[in-house]
Length: 408
Image 1 (cartoon, rainbow, N blue to C red):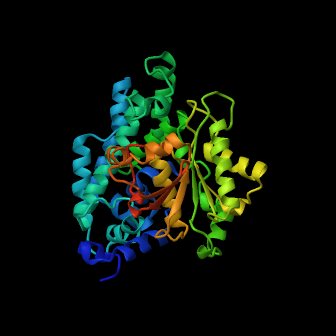
Image 2: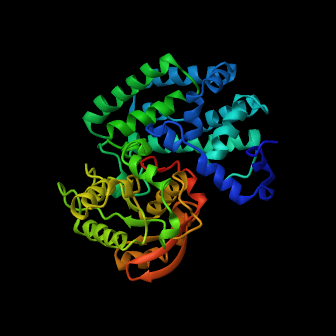
Image 3: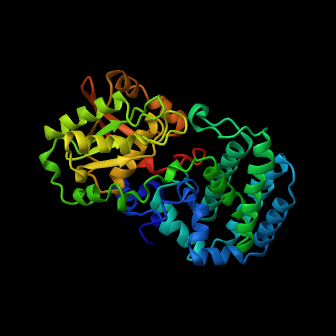
């Protein structure tokens, strides 16, 4: 049995080895929104042998053709929205077909053992083989349906003030222009490759694009763009020379339009620079996405990085940006993902800085994390000062949150 297959032995598989495999894994095509939110479904089309196996199955082929025809025939807003989604029957039918196709050693099994398990994206499930694939598929399908409902039918998202649809769905513009054009574009693309998952996956991609909601892939692939220099520096770092591995700065977006960085953002970044100059940690991680105000063009992490470099002369090779988080919970989760992926010694403490009141709320944030994420992505240490708090990143952070397409 290979080391990845041993996941099915549960607690017999060492936690340190499990974390190491996840740390070494590299996600495929992180610059695509579907690869962030629905990794399994995205890989069905990314991996040729899997695509061939799935698309040659008669039941799944028939399902894909029927979905395409249904989309083409839709004429009302409700019909178009429903045609872009999976029905409950389609989710069930596709899940059973995938389970039937699964065999040890075949392309679906390799997808599971070489990508899904080592990615950690679906680590909340304890099943193996076909049963695990069914659960993963159901999560992806429900996530795609959620995104279509929010960005085509104005379903209220988890955070409506910052994440809601950008159109009045009852307006003539949306009903007669926007949604029919989305329908036509999706159908035109799906005709070339009418797989069973094509319509909803293309719908999510199209709807997020027209709503200007592709924030989950800003600056991706990060390790080759904004974080390239710092990631290279990680491998050269002597961690014993510092009390902490990183200084995480929690973003504070401005409320006014046309303001790139808020006073709070400057003050938090400045304090991190002072800690860095005192050799408290070799790296600063600035975290925060394009959040405030609604539809802002400015990214909190990117603007803080510029500020640190321009005003405090912190070298780019010592700044990591985490440009996707939209909440305090995901500031920690996404920073933890970076720290694992880039090879930080995660058994050693990092420190987070923000305002005193913000850190007070962080110390009471476990329940919120459990409610919003389903797990806590960190272990807190000591409150060192009014504005600094120790934390340890946890490998649970790799789990995908498929109903948050702007930052899954």
